[in-house]
Image 1: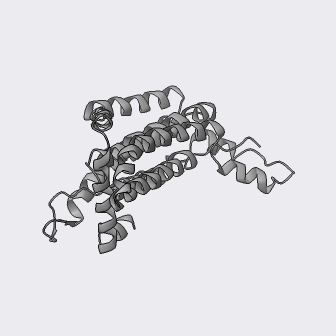
Image 2 (image 1 turned 120 degrees about the vertical axis):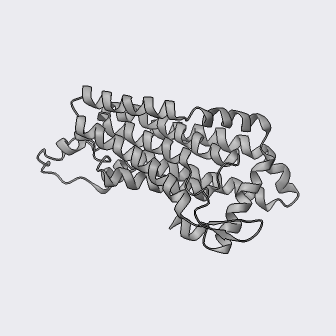
Image 3 (image 1 turned 90 degrees about the vertical axis):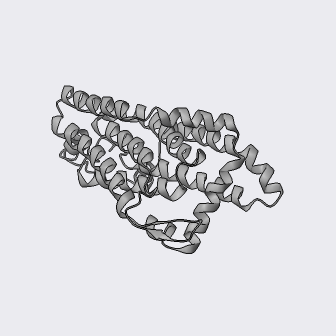
Length: 266
């Protein structure tokens, strides 16, 4: 759906290009810091992360969950690379479409970070999940938006990566931690839960919201200074860039914080 709206429609491509062009107001120091973050995502660090996932899940006696989570990460990354070559890409300068040319949709870096974050939450116990979800939300937000800030990807590439990573974890049933599955086997309480209690289960915790708000302040604050200069002179692109960052930040919160929300004890 993201590819259909943002790449195959003229207005979607225009909005995507405006958002990417609006990043030019961002300072060089911010771009250099984002490049350092993205360069840390490599084959070596990915391999170490996958090994750690399997080992930690094994130590917890959850080998199958660890293998499913690892398979979800690998599947999401490989499918992202395949989609880049299979999906037709549009050249904004010539206006021509090309096949098997290696487009930018979806973002490989974004899908890697998102998949790893989901996998870490999946193999963690409820106590550790509550501690880790905030930092993982902030880290994922910084890494995914950095791909737009440095000009590697358009906002739609990152948004598609979030959906792709979530789809793989759902398909591999890695979004159902062992603690959650065992807890659903316990007998339900006699008293039905109130609507307020159910709504609270769906909302991010105060700790997670604090981490996310901190990441938003850092990312939007860094982009705001240069964007305000362009907006004063009618910079529509700068406004589109800021709006796209806000959308991506909200999408990261939904993907990470709500996808693996711990189930309260009954």
